[in-house]
Length: 483
Ligand code: GLN
Image 1: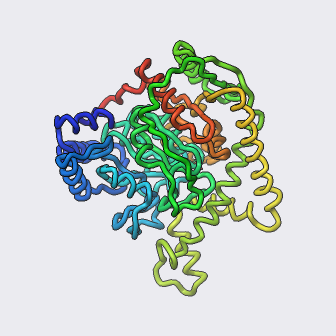
Image 2 (image 1 turned 180 degrees about the vertical axis):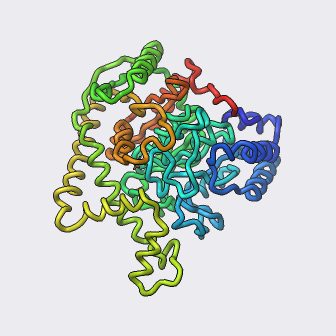
Image 3 (image 1 turned 45 degrees about the horizontal axis):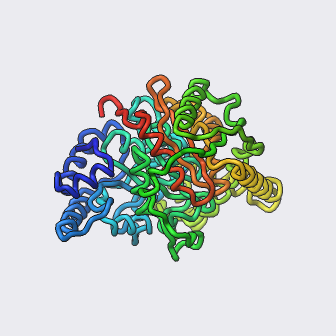
């Protein structure tokens, strides 16, 4: 039963082949048995899950239907869950029980999902390897010596290991797409403003966006349907109708114009990944797509711009965790300054402290123009590159990451080495565009992802292309040995 996708679960529940309660029990037992190897959960919510499963079964018995009614999922541990620990992967929030549900959580609960638990993540979503979590690193089910990607590494490892069919995640600079690539999943970062950020603990507010992680594009469509939509509680939420994503999956790709940026294939890209990307291009050509070489000339400036803007916003967002308003408080403070210093020094890990310092520096009076303002100008140039490209093509295709998942600990002594791995994903966040990563093959037994980007609010097109690709390839069906 653990092999079923969300779409298959919906059919099985509708056909009364099994109940949500039965399925939930199977998955909870599987998590108890296998998760100790992976560390993909921070908290399990067995009682809530069984309660929600029974309620979903009762709703079905009363004639209700719906693709998410009775579907087991988990939430990345930065979505607030009422009365349940919401840690953000940090000692700072280890004992924080959220007083309310994030909009994503309440929308999905209303659609009938069953919450199995809260998944592990990089501390405050800062990272690409899930090694900065206060709750310990997450392991990649494809090779337990390798990282699963980050910051949504717990969601990715759990779904890849078939502990559950899908999970929520967030993407500030690639944290849905990169772990999807590293664990052979399909992950979608929606357009900025498509999914409410209310109750989603902020890292960099102008870049953060929640989205689905699942095995197939079809399942991403199902989960996104339950997450997307206008939310008056989020001032950056956009009031744009949500299309029927599942209905759009079967559109033909005949004549689809795919842009392949020449800058994506420079030095730094593993040549074996380049080959797999070429294979995926050929596959899409067979389905009728037309390929065009394009250029994104400002892409080279994106990493430095992102690593100024994201820490700048983080330094501001994280100022609320001071041991008074929110978060861990040190023992026996001598005075207020001591309380702030020790609470923040003890509560935040090294990577978070580094980013707060970088961000505070970039925003300081003497350096604002030199760093922050300049980074914002680059951000506009990156967006303009995309706007020009989308005048000529319908989607943009390239690798999701320059390399496959690295070994645990391999980049710990050099944070910049990890930052450079974000080269293909962060531009979509800077521009606010939707992006999807889907399985494209393997290198040394480790999964490789291909990334698709589309104009604003064209998540449906990304899902359509990915679904057609998945009907004609079987990379996404491969299961890691031992799971
Ligand atoms: N790796 C990037 C960072 O550390 C992106 C993280 C994310 O998307 N949350 O900032």
